[in-house]
Length: 158
Image 1 (cartoon, one colour):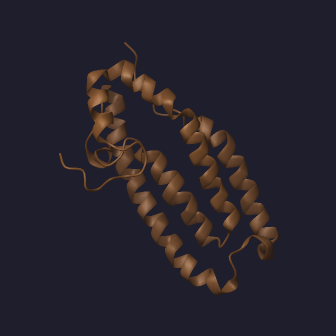
Image 2 (image 1 turned 120 degrees about the horizontal axis):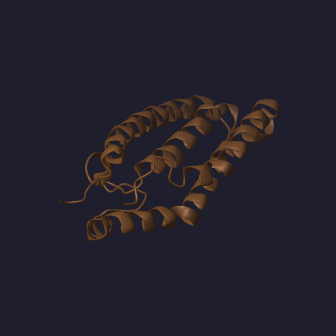
């Protein structure tokens, strides 16, 4: 029987995003005048970035807690943050954490890492979807029809 894995398509996303992120941070430090949003935006973006990072960490930890049990027991998870979207871990990293980091560091180029990550996610997510379909069949198909792929829907009625 096929088993769930922890990494999924994460390495395929990280292979592009992490090197770009490192280069972006270095460029932002070396050339702040080119890559920042401007001094007048630094404080509001810092506050917004901190909020995004806090939400990202909470969302990420909540996802990991549920995901660890699912992998251990090889079960489909449809509760917790998985009630709102099928890929809460990628959402936390690509839509909350990376943009939060870009705002905290006052760097627009860091936000491009989020866009690259989303493009990679869209390119490879079908691999995880196919695996879950093979493992869980109709249960996954039912979950898939009522739960968004990426952006959470907090108004889903169960």
